Length: 137
Image (cartoon, rainbow, N blue to C red):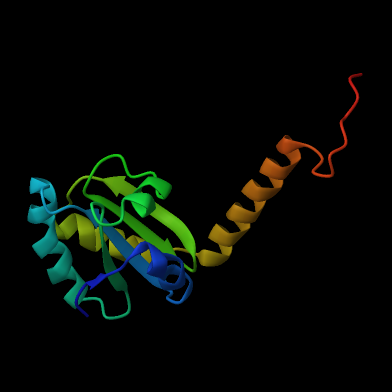
């Protein structure tokens, strides 16, 4: 499968509607992005079970800001709606293949359990959510 350009409006539904999604945040003026583009496209052809997407950070500035993109290219990988990889910088084909293989090999039961634990810990650290205050001891 070739790469697919997505917009901010399509981002959430793309992540939610596909098992594995890679996202290449790039811009036309970015030299490393232009170098990475053909590699990304070539590797996408070898993995029809993975959706390879591209987000133009110039056209989608709000999405890039929401995603915390501070350097391009940045590659993100989502599996079962969970961000499992995020790294700025262009990868060579071998490195990109390693990322794809690692994402495919993840034990998602373990990943989902880890995410649930983090949410519980975050909620506990935030304290009661009903507006009450815990009195000082």
